[in-house]
Image (cartoon, rainbow, N blue to C red; front, side, top):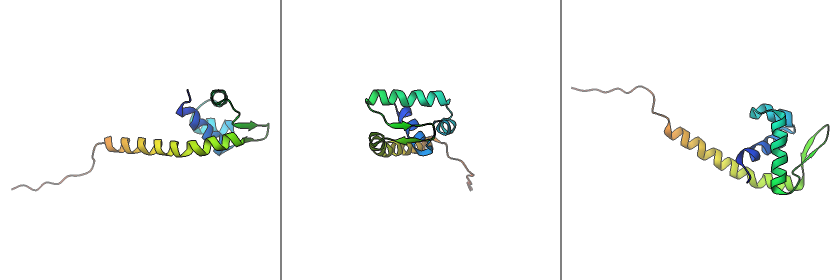
Length: 99
């Protein structure tokens, strides 16, 4: 089963072009990021990233997958943000004038 966290990690590695920077940005250990991406590749049955000692790049399958996943992530983030905002209590000053 493909998890939302794995897709977020893939997006982070792709955007930052680094497993280490993505790990730092996501608050994970670099080894965890590597393991999550490897498991996602295994689940999908294809290589998503080309790793060299100097750079990380998306494969064509990775670029296609990420292009399809991005709108889903953005939609999920928007719903989450809206729900969190809707649950927050109202704040501020309320003035009442009564006889």
